[in-house]
Amino acid sequence: MDMSRARGTRERLVVIGGDAAGMSAASQARRLKGPDELEIVAFERGHFTSYSACGIPYWVGGDVSAPEELIARTPEEHRARDIDLRMRTEVVELDVAGGRVRARDVDSGAESWTSYDKLVIGTGARPITPDMPGVDAPGVHGVQTLDDGQALLDSLARTRGRRAVVVGAGYIGVEMAEAFVNRGYEVTVVNRGKEPMSTLDPDMGRLVHKAMEGLGITMVNDARVTELLTGDDGRVRAVVTEDAEYPADVVVLGIGVRPETSLAKTAGLPLGQHDGLLTDLAMRVRGHENIWAGGDCVEVLDLVSGQERHIALGTHANKHGQVIGTNAGGGYATFPGVVGTAVSKVCDLEIARTGLREKDAHRAGLRFETVTIESTSRAGYYPAASLMTVKMLAERRTGRLLGVQIVGREGAAKRVDIAAVALTARMTVEQMTALDLGYAPPFSPVWDPVLVAARKATAKVQAGLR
View 1 (cartoon, rainbow, N blue to C red):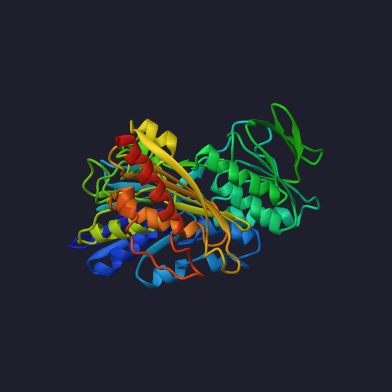
View 2 (view 1 turned 45 degrees about the vertical axis):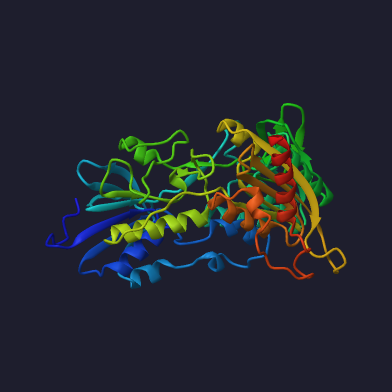
């Protein structure tokens, strides 16, 4: 047992997880309290800290040349700030009653206990791995960590074939499809849903489907993978569904993630319906004064529906870390919730959403109207103006904005930020039509596409009141 610290007035903050939430919390706490007041010990089981997992597909695809470009702060930089960062060390047990954690050195297997006064849980999420034959075969990869990205690139260097199959068509799936297209691979995406991007409504997902096929990607929708076949060398050679078989020299699993809360569950900490840790506005684990949690291992409040959701995004994780570090360092901060904003792309196609989909609104018991419009990214007469489709949901009778989805080319995705602000402010679609947005022909039509959708939604809501 680690009994080395002088008790005195100095407290110890232990951080589990060395990526966005955990190390943001550690860094912020250190800004507020020096090492003479607060000792900080952080555990990370991997080889890297404070990196952008969202950038892995772009590293694999060649847009980013090296993993170092995805690292915001190295272990050495954290240690220079008086954070005792222990790499390749995995916390395997959490003793809440005793105020201590048991950690294991990944390489040597040596174990030791470390006590804490304050604890931060930033264990992230784990990829969903289907239980099927061949899923552990060489050539089958996930892309959750930088170690995963390096393993995939090493695998590609040893593979002569040029056929890639991506299982899943969410954010990771479509981004990895783009990565393989950029590397000159023949790409097939096998998707269990009726359309790609289940974060969109199916009618908007259909636009993504058509665009991906236009890029030469083979889309297989409404298909359940049952088995991964291997060759005589034991390496993956095909993906099998209930109806067909797709040859593969490499397979990437992009099915999604779940909160990594096995430690928390065993320790009896409160979990939500998505198995994420439940916290209060200060990101403190409910019912535990000296334990905080943030990042992909927690559930967050959806400000539109009022329900808890699990959303794995680095933007949230970094904000959680700032809030946690402020509170653990003796200050005060809160994280009010999210509206569910996300953007992505596959080659030149931009995809964005915020707020609720139709099925989310139904699940929340809301009655709503929907409108879909087509517009252009710039004034129609200005060179390189491109089409985009905007879908908007508004609450029936009140006209409150409920959600926006956008699919288009250059200039489409970031327009969703207008809607994200409007959702946070609980604006009606009629109020949105008066927004004073920037205009010039190179940037927008006179009526921005989001405002065109708001005008149409306003008319539909008002028609329903007559």
